[in-house]
Length: 412
Image (cartoon, rainbow, N blue to C red; front, side, top):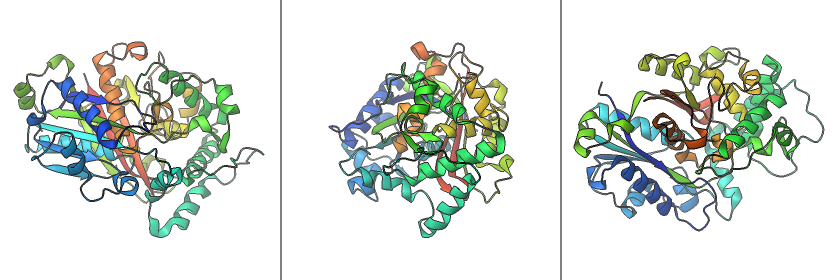
């Protein structure tokens, strides 16, 4: 298969951009990626657009990519619209890789953009309610929350304000991990405190305020054991990547010293595994496949970005990526293994909890952070000597796990 490279990548600051349009955010990300790759719009041979909110929040269904791209200077080339829940941006990236490997073109664009902050916040939260089988909502919900049975809920640990049912599901996953492996609320808080501290040094992060473990534990509760700073916010933002074959790099005269190799690009969907089959977790299977494709193992990874829509997500996913043994994600986090300067830094960007989570831009934002790290351009959050990086980005729910998971391994 052809070797594929990231020649250019960029993202906007993630956050509440009430005064900006979706097109404006997409344009900024595109312009940044093109400038980074030192190529122009006319060099692009194919484009993949990821956007979840165009239809339900802006009313633009069917052809959101064509509409957005027409406003930011891309036309005539093939455009594909990608929707794969929170893994949409990573899925667009995977399809760009596939198109290049197939010889469709030598330069491809993957772009994800979202405008989630609207006056009617309830409508924005409703987006997440479509991320499972809507014909079996009550059955889905009950199956998932039942995972948390058997853990005593302390008094005063439930919010009196409305919150997404997905947070109740994340809480159930937390409780299952707690009763199965002995994970503690303090260990989950350690993940959140670490990520908020990392975000202080990320100029693209939505939140840049550090928190201690004690402050995370004392924060307003959502539902036990989750508190507010452990959760990703509603975010606006965009991110874009320019991918090339060797021929594409030559055509645009790319600076080879800054081009990052895509060593593996894997997408998997859920299976009907049982709770007592963690070895069959979708992300674990996808990660194992990615390691095989890259010819690398978890011991070779220098930095990781994982999907932490809640802090518990990081604990689950570092175990799936084999960066920690099953049940050891919490203790590893508490002793600092995943902190900058630790054994294997995870989410140096601040993660979804503080960098933000504009659904379809999230995965590309993770990849932007990893490219920055591998180029040695991350400033105060730089991991010294980073050569190999791994990304995990999940979306939706089916059965007892994500409906879709993307794993990418990048190499310097």
